[in-house]
Image 1 (cartoon, rainbow, N blue to C red):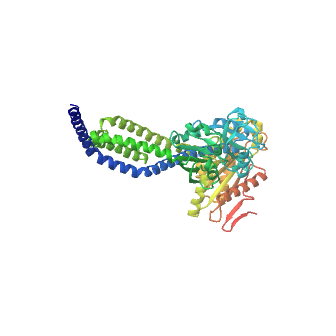
Image 2: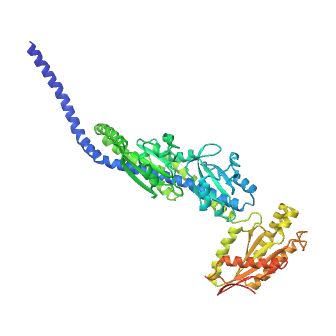
Image 3: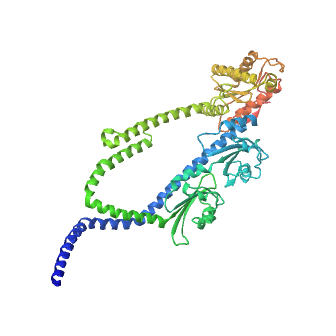
Length: 563
């Protein structure tokens, strides 16, 4: 009886195992070849994926470097602009007012701007807490004065606020030899770290921006605890601290084995214009672990895809996703190359992509208009940058540009070029007597007069600086230039602007005239120096005069003073 029961159970077991075996065999027939091929492919590409991951993070690191470089470049531009204002601003009071008004709101990484005098004390600042602070012992300040160039400091703590900062410095002496002030900018660490956000939140990745001594200036948000520490105190980076900081190369990479036996690759890139370096460390073990997880997930997904929706998913993905994405990517690429007229054809896209296409088209139209507006604004700013707002004439920059152009033109056509340097007589006494507002009105009327004479004589008038004006006369001989100079002198005197401290009782000008035929042995500044010498002679003749005594005659043999 027991034997019969045993045989029955064995038959049932065979039947059960037979069905399961056939189902398993069918599943293997359907899935196993694909799974085996996929497994072999994944195993073969494991090392390639690690290399690609390293390259991806290298690209991200370079992107962060480029962004940091743009931050430093924008800071340098602001400092140079502020230094130019200080060099030409006419006094510390005015310079400070313009400094406070010029702090860019679109550059949030600039915490404060400061002007430091020759004794190292802060004369003025966009933040009043720094005014009067003594920074004379700061190395970056000394280095900026010695190099007369842009300097970016190491990590330090602000004297008054004890807040960690990095300072950028630019000496005014780089623009004006007589100036001893230095323009400073305090850089916000939060923004520097925010730029590195694309390097954070990734397993096995450690990133830090360090200064020349290895202090961490910035790091992604998830690694913010490193900020302020030196690389020697960061376990994951201490092994490469000396090599990365001591290298003179602009960029490089290192590979080493850590104490726990894992392999790490480190890439470092110097931020141009500074001694700071961006260091990115990649733990290949953790990166590989993530890839292994993806492989295991791929096995599971592959099994289900092979069993149920492989063919249908491939067709649907090709028609409904891949082709529309490639179409949108191609349109975006053309738009990025400057084709502002490109638009997405909505009738060629699935209904799900129509809202995206509509949004893209609207964005393209807005960006195209903004680009046109930006070009127009830049053109306007270029014109404004060459105009003296007080007199309405070209400023010194605009005059120099026109002088260079007319010089080349005269040299090309072998024609004469004349220059009148015009200075208001006793203008300081005029300002002291009538006040600066009246002085500005006087300069404005002189500008109008010179503009009219320039229109009559086909010349180009400009304000050279202060009370000194200039009139450039293309294709004009020395004799004709002297006549025009006397025309200017008489026209100003006929304005009858009162000047009680002048012996002439009205505002008068002295005019120096210079003429030449430009050649390769001469330079435009020779013509300016010649006219200045003639102007000096006119002053010594008693003012209200047009002179060529001491006037430079430019000949083929060079430059000589007239007797």
